[in-house]
Length: 204
Image (cartoon, rainbow, N blue to C red; front, side):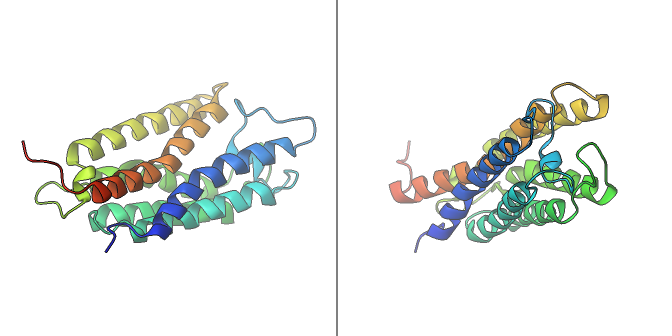
């Protein structure tokens, strides 16, 4: 029996494609162009954005992919998988509560985004096994999980600083953080799949 089902590989691979493809296509649809360095992803799904359904669909697909991947990461600890699923559900809420305007704000949207960014940054640390990991799960050790979470939190922190200070690179910081969080589950799935296919490491 495979440690990670094939559909989890597909969902984890689709996540970054949906996110990056969504913001790329949605930005191209905005009249007069869209500044992706200074403009946020949420602005592309705002109620007054042109063809807002493009970014909305990308966010909905991303959230569903995270939930599916969490269900398929069977070798990992339940706490981490639940946190990944929470990040997926919060991403769905981000799409469900769009900004009223591209320059506007929304409390439900902001809270949903905060939960999504936080959960998707912390899940690798909680998913890693500390002792007596099951076969295949050693690809995500406690050290690797903590290091991944620390990197993701640093990227989210950069975005938070840009957002709170009104920086000129809000969009860039958000895309780097969100892109890294979307890519992380795929890297974990690939590591688990590779470790299972290759068998246990040779004793030293």
